[in-house]
Image (cartoon, rainbow, N blue to C red; front, top):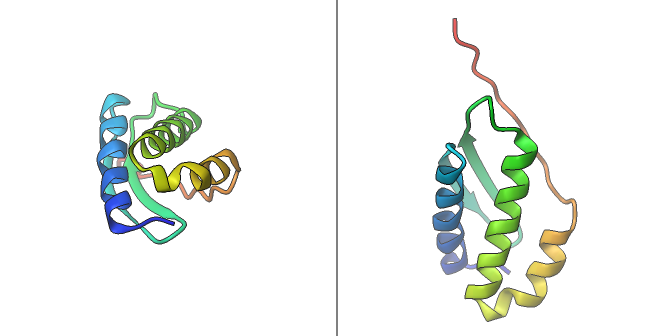
Length: 92
């Protein structure tokens, strides 16, 4: 489903969304049907707001930009197929 062009576009959109939320997209990569992201975000931002905003914004922009993703993106982004690993750095 995802090609290199899709992934590059996704990265640009995700970086803007993160910036708007005062977060930073550190790394982003993926495969045909998934994306891996490393994001730093401030403690005042809830993880649910970050994830929901990213899912909504990226899926909408990808569907609008790429006709070939319109049908598959609806089913992919409407599900709850999300694995989240949070790594916290505690200042010493």
